[in-house]
Image 1 (spheres, one colour):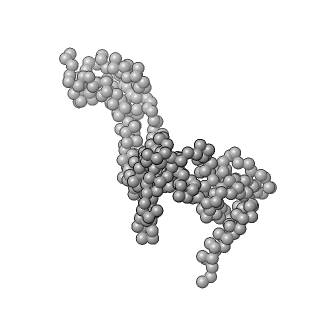
Image 2 (cartoon, rainbow, N blue to C red):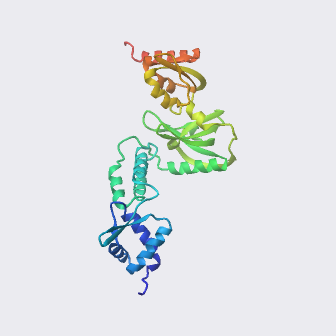
Image 3 (tube, rainbow, N blue to C red):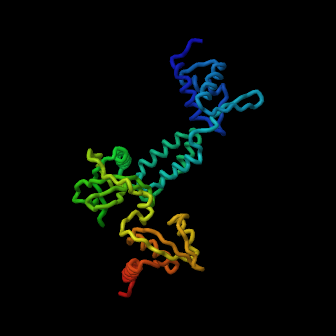
Length: 327
């Protein structure tokens, strides 16, 4: 048989066919495979398909032949990502605040193409990018790439950083002059992506929301070196990624809050049993965000020591209650 113009592409087209159209619930017979290939300008003898399928198996594709009476059907039994994993990835993209609605839809479409088209179309329909608050910064992906490049190269970065005022206008930090930072790590916490970096102006480590950074550039200047910096320890001390003053704090919790304490401080934290309650010690960044977290538990949680932090918390509570005093 004379070879068709697209004969050299046959193996690639055959692999694409198995990846896009087959899975445990969607199988193709040899006749159907021939028909699909013919539709793309590739004619082939059935006996050659046996060797082509075997070649794809040898290359690592998990192609299974399933016999039914006189008929045999073929399908791709496993992939790099299983469907529950793709559902998880797509769900994470849809719920991520730092990813814009437009980019979320685009990324979910790409994730769906990792499954066969039947399951991929279901995934796109099932995962909804809802009305949750999402970033409007479409350049966030390029910012992340630049930060990673700077961390790998040990370089500083410059960027503009903004927040919003009461009229929803962008207000830039540092009089709209670039901030120069030595990035240490990218951290995902509390539904946001942060750059943890040394900021010389403040003489310490600061956390910057990636979706509020624009015009990120990798500089030639070497980053400040700090081999002893522990990014995990830094993040554990923080509440809501807001900085404060570092303190070793002793806290008391009612026993009903044991799960909350484990979630926040980890299983390795020592609990000191006090009957109906327990105490623990943790090094924290004491800030209004920490007080707000503790305040939600009311009388079921208490700052035991040091006295200075107890007083700070008492003052925080009093100032809050003043907002609701009699007019």
